[in-house]
Image (cartoon, rainbow, N blue to C red; front, side, top):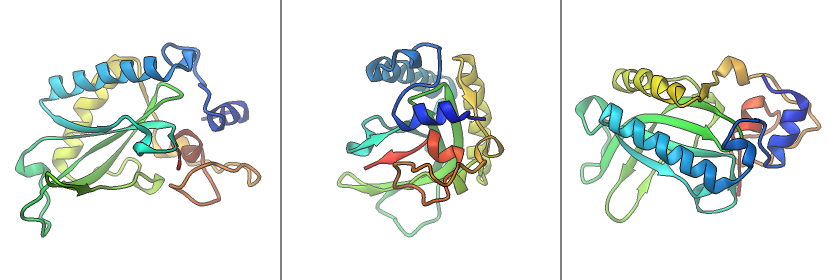
Length: 187
């Protein structure tokens, strides 16, 4: 899916798209666009969200980690955290460097004083085992595509990168794949 030139741009935190807002390489414009898109997702699907806009508070993340759920039983987990809010939800990784997104399923737990969460990894790509999450994904995909975004699937991103390419990520170990070049977190 990605050319060697695109991989080089991605790893230097540069856009691979000629479309706006990505072509601007202006992080604030890109974030503003995604804030509008995510607000549309929440409004049109009657879902709630928890979104990491700030690179996980440190380093650089080549993506925005948007997590959508509904406070319904079909999104609940059967964990031991009785005083915690805990839901399964749809992870949407939104590339800061291209109009691409991917889907995964992840679980979050939280109280007023803290919480825990998943860390996205390629093994999670396209895995949506919870029926409520899978149904939400179908709705969300249509909304994202109406905003000009393009879904990348595991098969699109599974090709290995040349062994001499080093991806600045703490989310994966070599050998790296195209997924790692598009969605990485450098802490």
